[in-house]
Amino acid sequence: MEAQKQDLAAALAKELPLDEETVFGLIIPCKLPEHGDLSFPCFTLAKSMRKNPALIARELAEKFTDHPVGTVTAAGPYLNVKLDESNIAAKTLTDIFDSEQYGSSDKGEGQTIVIDYSSPNIAKPFGIGHLRSTVIGRAIKNLFEYQGYKVIGINHLGDWGTQFGLMIAAWKRWSDEYDENKDPVDQFYKFYVKINALTREDKSVKEEARGYFRKLEEGDEEATKLWHFFRDTSLEEFEKIYKLLGVQFEYKQGEAFYNDKMEPILKKICDKGLAEESEGALIVDLDKRDTNLGKVLLKKGDGATLYATRDLTAAYYRAETFKPAKILYVVGMPQKQHFHQFFKVIELMGEEWASGLNYVGFGHYVGMSTRGGTLVFLREVLDRTSAMAKEIAQGLKSREQIELTDEEVNTVAQAVGIGAVIFFDLKSRRAKDLEFDFDRLLNLKGDTGPYVQWTYARCCGILRKNDREITADVDFSLITGDEARALLKMLLRFPAQAQKALDQYEPSLIASYLLDLSRAANSFIHVNNVIKSEDGLRNARALLIHCTRKVLGQGLKILGIEALEKM
Ligand code: ARG
Image (cartoon, rainbow, N blue to C red; front, top):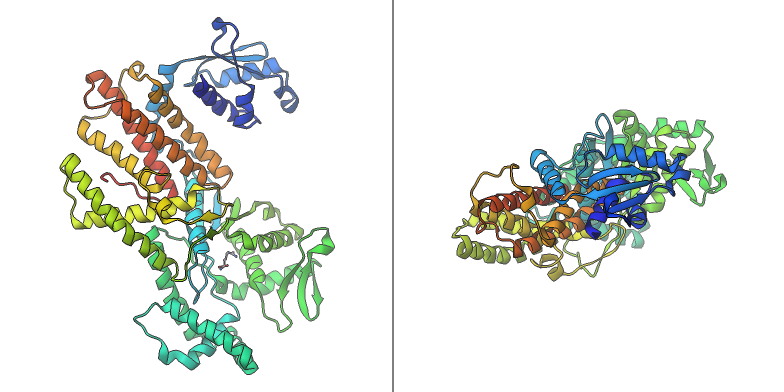
């Protein structure tokens, strides 16, 4: 009865100020069979809900008049449940079959979410941290959209700052060495490293760079042209990564976008009396305001603005332009302090929308050399999956006599390789560091994206062989056995899981769910033949496979992973 207890806990937790685990711990078996199977005592809720337990039980029972868990009745302070198995199957499968997107809702209708993600730096390598931000950010974006929110994705490019003065100084010296046929970002970065080294030997280079940056700020034609060149060329390179990942942004508003918007914001902060001068610079001293957040530098002695100045300005711009319910920032843990600092400044400014600012941090990859950059890494993964794809094609040929074209084999290689990278990233809680390992990434039978994709394709294969129209008009009482029950239970959990993943900004809850669902599906398939069963049973089982395939597909889509019909 554990499985049903879990289902009941999940269903009740949605209605109560308790989490699923707590509810689960409170559920007891009914003493007398005529009362039902499971019982939930409402005493503990009386205090927090300020209602008497009997009333709580009655109100809950009303909410569950028509629920797949079974027949729910109130008996004094107890909520009693008589489980109905075929009812669970009927409700769940009909629900999935009928819905366009099972577990989606319009809860977020009329609300906008801004999500700041990916955000690499111009003329610098697109790092693994940026890859993580891109993958996690996109999945969170999808989770919001699943619940009906309008989501605006912004790529906050690092396209401004004194380093562009250095870049121009480098270009002036070494542009002859630039080779259009080689990786541009890699070459820019080498220039950057080289010029930085030079500033240590020759102090005048720093002055020179400062001069170029000033020119850039003043809109000097040549400096601006070079800046555009660095930016456009880098972006073109980054686009290759976005294309592989299938990521798009509503806006690419980098730091430079806020250049002409900072002064009014700085003035606002000064007018409020928050900013002060310190050694010629303009700062907000948060320590003075009972926080342990240190000092925020808004303007340097020479008048130059900083990363934080642009983030403050960007937050105001977004709040005013999009009127979002929330603004999320998906950025690695090392920047946690920076975000908490400028969120605090906005809070101290008394802005109502400050409470909607959310820092969504993540850990880093360990044990992986990314010297070649992210694109090189992704291409290496694809190299490895192209051999895998050929094996997959051979399997299809011998199993189903399906012959894939070369192009289709390539599609498989790409979907599997990219899917593996995305899944690996999203599998663990985002705050955790990831230990990189190629074998664990690509193992078709491990805790991997390819395993989930393979399970999806396996369901597709069964449905292909079944070759009958799927209907929800089946005899649900034929769906029996532990494996079927476990699979149904998993399917029933999906809506709550999607909501939980959204509440915690934790796509890993979808990834781990998909692994559980895949395991449950494969166990079911292992012991329940669909095609060889007689008619009624065959239709019922085929419906279950159809629904499983659908939920797997939706989960993968949320994560940004392609599902393949044949693999
Ligand atoms: N470009 C920054 C970096 O690579 C990340 C920007 C994150 N977003 C932001 N609004 N600060 O470190």
